[in-house]
Length: 105
Image (cartoon, rainbow, N blue to C red; front, side):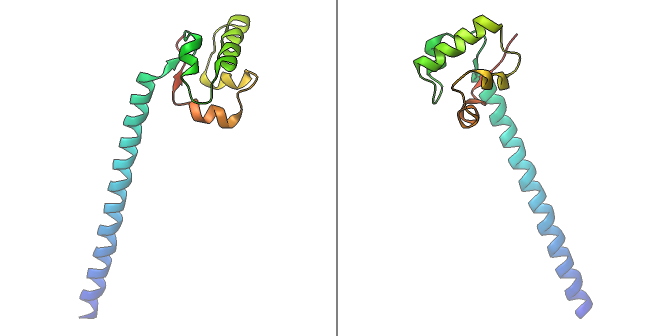
């Protein structure tokens, strides 16, 4: 009787673990799909005009202008993280927009 109870408890634990893994995998797939969708709608910082850049959270007219000037002075951005080189874009501001922008070269 005790052996059966131990087996059933072990099976219940294994089943719970398997269900947990499946739910985590489903969540990862969902997050990946969200990232793909956001990249499709992302603004290309190498070709965006000032008004498009202003639509990004925390980016006003002045900062949008600095992004454009930086692009003209130093050339196109090689990666999204290069926005951190623009004066006025802090780490926290960058984190808010990093999934909303992309770099096409």
